[in-house]
Image (cartoon, rainbow, N blue to C red; front, side, top):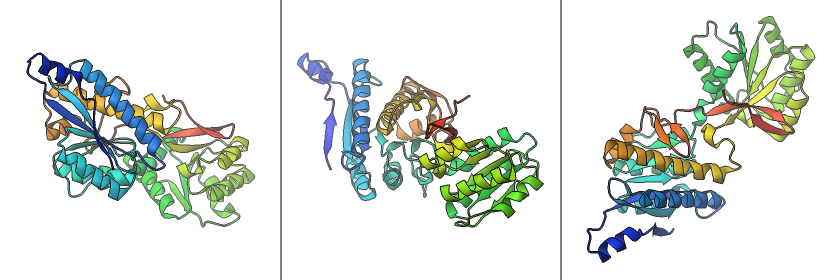
Length: 364
C-alpha cells in the first residue's frame, strides 16, 4: 500500500515567503486500485482528480483554503480496501472518492461513515454500498447504477411495448432470474398495471418450451421479458418463431453476448437486452478507465459545488445537502442523488444487436 499527499500547492510556499498567512489545507482522499488487473482504471481516476484539484486550486481553492489530494491503493479487494480506508481516515479528509470495485466499496462504506468521513463511491453497482447497516453517522453516496434495479428497468420497457398491458415474464428458475422477474412484477404493480403479468417459469437444459410458449398466444401477449441465460434464451426465441408469435422480447443483461447478438440479428422477432448504464454524459466514452475517470472528476465537482453552496465542509451537512437536489457539474452535466445516496438515473437501458455487438438504444 502506498500513501502520497499530492499537489503540494505553490500558493503555500509563496504565502510563507511573502510573510502572508498560509492557507489551510483541505484534504481530498482517493481510494482506487493501483495494483492488479484494475490498476489502469485506478490510475485514470487518480489522474482525473489530480487535474480537477489543480484547477480548483488555481481558481482559489474552496472556502478560501487550498486542496490536497491523498492517494491510497485499495487493491480492488476487501481487506486491502479496509486498510486503505483506515490510512485515509487517520488523515481526516473532507471527502473520499473512489473504490470502483464493489467488494472494496461495500467493505469500507460503514468505516468512513462511522468516522464522519463522506465517501462518494464511483462505479460499484452492488446494493450493499449504500444499503449499509447499521446506518453510519455520515451516509455514503454512490455515483453508479444499482444492479438490483434491473427489474424496474424491464418493467418500464414492457409498459412501453404493451399498450394493453398484456405482458409475460419467462424465467429459468435460477436465483438471478427470479430476482429480476420478481422485481419486474413488483414494478409493474407499482406502476398500476391493471393485470398481473403472465409468469412462466421454465426448467433449464431442456430442448423445447413449446407448452409454456403456447400460453403466450392464448393470452394475446404483447411483450415478453426473458430473465435467464443464453442457452435457454436461444431456445425461447426459436420456439416463438416456430409458433409464429411476432412478440418483442427483452432479455436480461447476461444475454448481452456476441453469440446472442448474432441470434438476435437473424431473428424474425424484435429482440433487445438490458445493459448496465450510468449517466448519459459518459455513454460515448470508449472504456471503463475513461468512464470511471470522468465520474471521479464529476464526483469531485459535485462535492465542491455543494461545499461552496452550503459554505460548510461538515461531512454530515454536505452528505445531506447532496441528496434530492440537482447538482451542476462541468463533466457530467446535472446529477442528482436520491435519499438513499444512490444516483438518481437509469441503472439499465435497452440495447439492440448491431454487427455482433450490443448498442444502446438512443436515450430519449
